[in-house]
Length: 163
Image 1 (cartoon, one colour):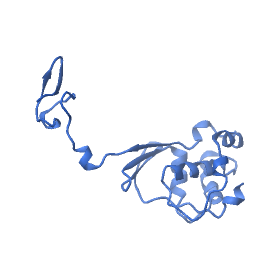
Image 2 (cartoon, helix red, strand yellow; image 1 turned 180 degrees about the vertical axis):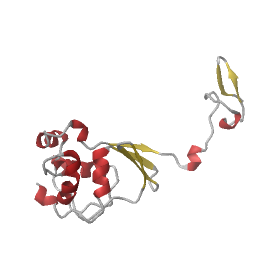
Image 3 (tube, rainbow, N blue to C red; image 1 turned 90 degrees about the vertical axis):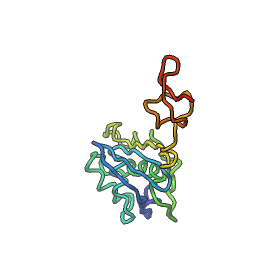
Image 4 (cartoon, rainbow, N blue to C red; image 1 turned 30 degrees about the vertical axis):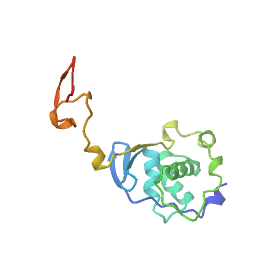
């Protein structure tokens, strides 16, 4: 199957990034979404410069995880990165994408711990205008500016936005 995808040279999108311990936070400003990549997904994403093929990326990444030269881990990561929208669209098609399942990858990389599987968590980030919006009546608050009414006060047994 790998000979069908060798010509593919994945290229990552332009995004803001921050490293946190073994994870990489990638923020896509155009889609207002943030993605948290584990160590494996981050290593693959950083190697996706558009200059290297999947097998070439696998050779660079294998030293981190001692995967024995099999590119299954990288192919799974590329599939997940594409689904998350973290790779630019290309004319090349990743053939066999639907056949690449976690179970198959685990069988092929049995020496690698499960924690080496690529993991991507995506959240939507509100636009600045949405983030600056106020709390409705009855919402818990701690100061007047948080409330649309401009009044944060005691409502029953809690502090909430009041009229």
